[in-house]
Image 1 (tube, rainbow, N blue to C red):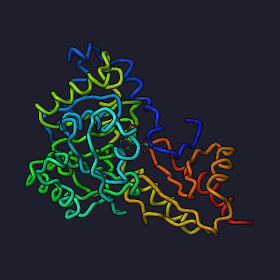
Image 2 (image 1 turned 60 degrees about the vertical axis):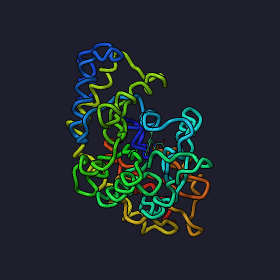
Image 3 (image 1 turned 90 degrees about the vertical axis):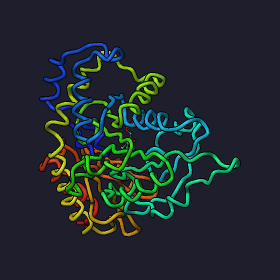
Image 4 (image 1 turned 180 degrees about the horizontal axis):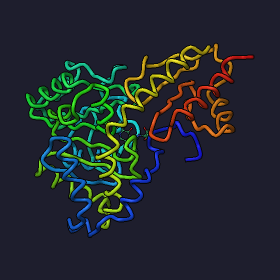
Length: 347
Ligand code: TLP
């Protein structure tokens, strides 16, 4: 990639090994279930996440929506964090397309919602109320600094779900980052969930695609939802081939992105006017906050960095998210560090 692009790990392009696998992929019509590469990717995914079955979908957004549609009926309610991607950034699809109501609970900075607050959000059986049917978590929690929810915490939510006869879904777009941050297996991390979505197209570098995992009967329902949403992709093995490479050779590497995030954060926090919104990065994201000591605004910084071939995003409040990924090597990291120093340390 020519740009040093820190806006997201979604910007990652496929590796040379992926491009080769894509060119050679064995194909079939996946709507008939006949694409051997898609089938292989689904089996591998289910195995790695410790679930019975899996389904390849075009995106994380569709994965969450298809999973939620498979769990809920129209008029049902889901309990969901106020900083979760599904609530904030999926165009309200669960309500617009699923007729599903959201009971929004408050995420803390570490990504959790206290167990008692989740339990208090479960509706009692009364004709006035929607029917609670699902609890949604996100791991890692993007808008909470890329924080990782622990096995203990997740199991606690799983217990609440069981006690009340609810299902639990994890938006695990970056579940492998979470597993690495916590030094546990991804299967352990999602064992108490009924379903999980994870993305192949973020830190794992595949060009597109996400996976939903769960029990066979649930995946059949999700399959129908995918069809309804227009996500049946025919010769999707071209994409799935990159996904297989992603799972086989890109997972352990995510650790390097976490190290890079910590290294860069340590340097940047020493500069005047910069603080870390969520402390030391837990995974591959750094959230910087510029204060009134900063010699440049977030908006100006975006423009000045663009001139130097570096892409970043800044919010109007001066928050900047920098995301580490495969295409940010040591040389790029040094260039980014120098660019920050140039604007934040006046000569
Ligand atoms: N997140 C993107 C943007 O949409 C904000 C990013 O740059 O981080 N779940 C989580 C936790 C996500 O962070 C994302 C993408 C998704 C789901 C959706 O994935 P896609 O983009 O494949 O629909």
